[in-house]
Length: 318
Image (cartoon, rainbow, N blue to C red; front, side):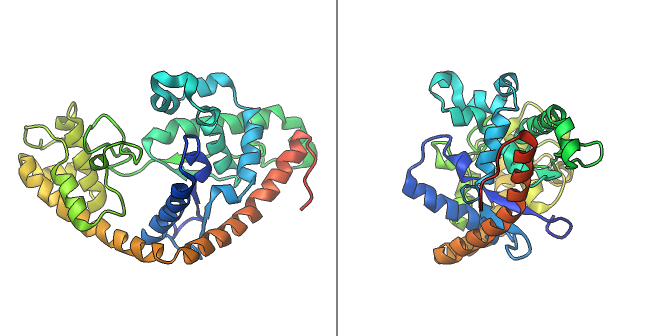
């Protein structure tokens, strides 16, 4: 997308603190995620790479959206239900209103397209609903100020981009759970900081069933671990699941896992090596974030000023 779009890549540290974080670890993780972006090939000179907390428009716009979005919308968010679990009453307010901050992340830049995994599609739909309600509630004011974009109102309707064979990567230990760094088991995931031996071992130990791989995609139904590993292979190889199964259909996992491990190491180990080089120079990472934050503010703050004018708030002096 870097070749075809003006891209903004955000390290979402405000989202991270919806659950408690060790402050020193959080700083390290902000730099790690930034290093991962750069190591994966994102160009911070051509595009914007920044961390959320350095652009205050995200938090300010999120509060306005807290007053636009409806409780019923947030109550339907399946991610909150999954993360809060049975301890819902002890979850932070931030975890509950997380989707409104995500809406602000998108709409502060009046973004039109957002690449996401399948698990975030519901949050994109909420961002669209929030944009539509804001445009409707303040339609007369938007027209009065001449801030509308045709019939669409002030905010666009952002479109989710959900592409590729691995739009929801699942745990290596449980095919019913999303791969996550918050999982207690490090063997459930591949970290971009893992070395080649660790990547290989994790894949070889990944949970599977005893049946051979099917030759058709239909055969992956009701086999979540098999479906996940085939999807990971397809994504890393730039192929479809059908193409992977045409090669490995009928093979046992004892043959498929080594092939997947070799492919994962080939694809991910260079990223991990580049990350280690970048993390050895935290001042460079901080400089990338400072530059990106300044460029992000230059886009987001005028949008926030327009929103304040629309809502009837006084602008702050800058």
